Every structure is written in structure tokens, then in C-alpha cells.
Amino acid sequence: MIGLVMAGLIWVSPAQAKQGVAADVGDFTFFALADPQINIPKWGTAGTRKTIRMMNDLPGSETPFGTVVEEPRGVLIAGDLVDDMGNRENWRGYKDLFDPQGEGRLRYPVYAGAGNHDLTSDTGFGEFNWLQKELIARNRRRPAELNLGPNGYHYSWNWEGMHFVNLNVFPGNDHRPVYDNHAPWNDPKESLGFLKKDLAEHVGESGRPVILMWHYGLRGWGNSLVREPMPVVYNQSAPIEWFDFIVVNECHRSIYNLWRQVLDYFDAFLIGLTAPPTKQTIGFFNGNLVYDYSHEKAVADRNCVCSD
Image (tube, rainbow, N blue to C red; front, side, top):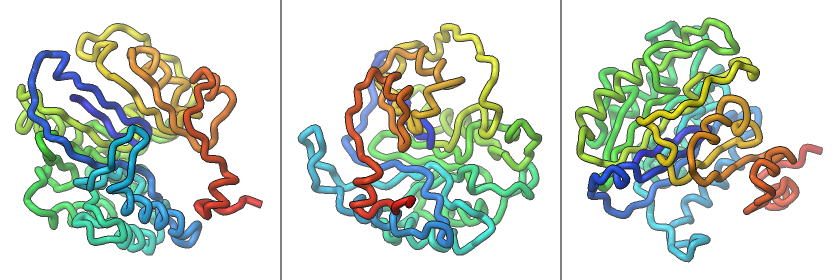
């Protein structure tokens, strides 16, 4: 199985089964989320705390499929841990909520990576800002289950025969522009090199399922919305039947432009998630609206505040 957990996409596919390779993977549960974006002075943490209480209470509850949610091994957090790097109170608030040993308000161990909100523009290429250094320190205080990269920033681990890899911001070895501007601080810290070495050492030809986690798209973020599309051609290393389903977050925008080519290429079921659905987005899914949680209900449930 090859899976991908991003702030933008979650992909899962039993690829090794299609290649005739057996893998010994036991049943287990994990949760995944992204963009907690803690900003205490701006919007507080009441909504985040309520979400955490719901997650803490999930085990033992029934799923829509008639099964029961098991106790998770941990929670993946795919970046944007804080919203404003200029206020360290936000990081202290994050640490109170989410802890690598499960000693925060969320009672499960978290496996977190950095996102673009966790970067600072005054950090040079190859350098780490204060929050990245904090992440490295937290990684090194974990039990010996982690396979740490040379600087302790990227890491991997195994759960029940499945291999997980955290690549933080995006997979690559060089920085990428932001809003088409030179941005050496938008630096993946040799994450692609780490990934290649890690897979060679810990997966190889074993057929072990792999879950990759990073924050945003392969082409970076903040670039111009209008770009010439790349030609869509068949790639035998990524056959069109590779994925069984694709979960698209922020699908009010991520189903268009460059990502639309990805969705059109693969023969897979599509599941869209969005906060502000548009008529065009609902039309893209042929009006198949599975679940609707309105802003009015969110306000009534005290998960959001009224904008009026």
C-alpha cells in the first residue's frame, strides 16, 4: 500500500497487492489532521479544545460502517502547527494541546511535521528557525521507535508492519519560490534525500505498506494560480489504477488548475472535503453531497462564532 497524508490530499492504495507482493500488516487505528494553526490572541483555542475532546472520546464509538473506533496508536499532524511565528505564546499553547508522548490535552501521541506557517522568511537556506529546532528537540526525546534523519528533523517509524515517513513541508532537496519570488527560507531540508535513503533501508523490496506525510503540494505554495498545464501522459511508475480512492481537502479550489490533471489521470473514487462549498464544486461531484455541516449548526453547536 502506498499512502499520502498532506494538508491538501490523503491518498491510499494497496499497490503492493496489485504487484503480487505480500505484506504482513496487522489491524490498527490512527488519526490524521492538519493546520491546527494556534493563534491565541487572534482566535483562541476553544474550538481546538472541543475538537480534541471529541477525538479523545472517539474510541468505542460506532462508525458509519457499523464498526467501532479502536484506540489509535497516535495522531499525525501534517503541518501549520501555529498561525503566527511572531508570538511564542502560540507555540506554548500548541505544546499544551499536543504532545509526542500523549501527555497534552489530546491523550494520544502526536507525530507532527512543519508547514509553511511554521517557517520564517529570515531563515537562510539550510538553517533552522526556533520552532523547527523545538520540533527536532521533541523528536529526539521520543522513545527509540523513530528513525531520525541526520539533523533529527525528518523521521520515520513503523506501526504493525506499516512504514510511516514524515517529510515536513514538502519532499525536495532545494528551496522553492513563494508567490513567484525567490524564497531560500522555503527549504525542504533535504527531505527527498532522506526519503530515498529511508525507503532503501527500511522498506526495500519487502512490499511493506508506506504512508508519506508532508504539508503542501509538490509545486510549492503561493505561486500564480494561472499556469500553463503540464502535459498529461501515461507514467508506468504511477499507473492510472494506482489508487482506490483520493480524498481531496479544500476541494473548493484544489480540484481546479494543476491538481485537476492529477484527479483526471487516476481512475479512482474521489471524496471532497471543503468548508466553503461553491456551486461549481458541488457540480464537479455531480451533486453527490454526502454530508453537510452548515455554519449555522456549527454556531449553534458552539464550534464557530457568528460572523455578524
